[in-house]
Length: 163
Image (cartoon, rainbow, N blue to C red):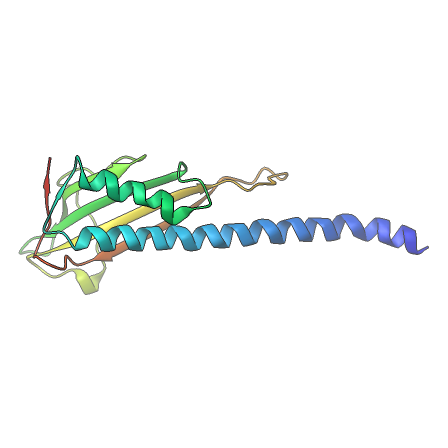
């Protein structure tokens, strides 16, 4: 009798075990995605001008170290400088991306009200990570884990992008 009960309960227990394992991995990757967004935005916000050909690729490659031991290839990273004019309209001054599409220069964007101050700039770092569960037997994935971080430039009123 106990063997029959065990045979009925075992599949449910295994499902719970594997689901918990996958959920744990997703939570860890989500934390790493948030940390990647914060770190990249923080690094960019410390420049007064930044090179699109040398410095930004190095910063983007740092994402692979932050996301380790998980692969960095599913990560899409966009860093943008948003200028807010006299009227409070926020527009993209420049945007660069790694494994993603950059925002269009001049595109109107929404910034948090606490940062929507006329005649200022804001750095926006965005990370989108396509998390693929290891045991995707229910075919639910990939799950897109996202992080958007806004920071003010630290050493100047704006950060210029040089080629």
